[in-house]
Figure 1 (spheres, rainbow, N blue to C red):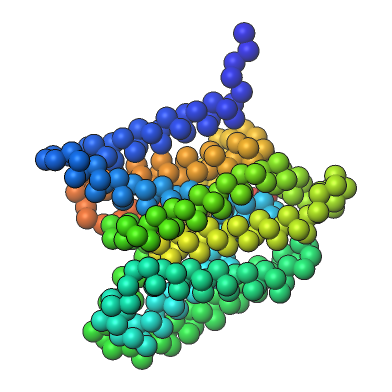
Figure 2 (cartoon, rainbow, N blue to C red):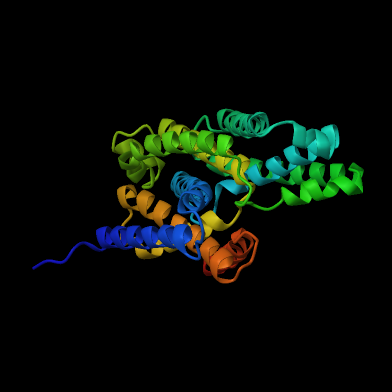
Length: 318
């Protein structure tokens, strides 16, 4: 009797591991009123799942369009723009003014600015999908510009308020507002659904521009639409919890290693599940086992950076 195909088995295993990680996160070490515990932990779990899904899918889709497995959406300078926005707000309004701004207005402003910048960049440079090299190079240059401006403003900020900027420099999962969480979850779900409906087209896009055109797919249009969805996912996740640079690269490397296929019908759900398992499982270990009141993002980013260096040294660009 023939066994189950490897890609399908990988998705099933990832689903089981993700469910186990979520169950442990909700129940491990829980005491007192279960209704309160589950509601409190459930909100944080949703934030972890939203960020994990957005980062994983945006990275896989971005790498498919660019045809390079060592690139991530952060190469376009999203994290640098986010930090510039945070620094500018603190410089202009002060720490108290930023706190009084409100979670929803601040989230909407950050998301709108990052999304607008990404779409403007894509519209200006992606008239043809073979301009991706110029797009990536421009993104790197803008990232350097944003970081330089952030460094300049940091020198002008009152030292007593610099802690507000430092707190925004790392992804944070312990202080997510419920109102903006559900907005982010809705936007991520919509972008995920739209990306899923294009999984068959992404298979063709991954073959390259000339091959895709020969097979009857408008590669330029598909690349622009996919990059638009990537911009939405990255903007929402970054505005929700902060910058996550190398996590997507780590997930993408693991998914391509275990998927056993190039089909996005497998890659997309597997990436979301693997990403969720790593983030939720890591946060569970940090909070419930090690009793560390910190975010696991620092450790994951460090591991992702090592993976990036290994991929570069081994020359696994594709």
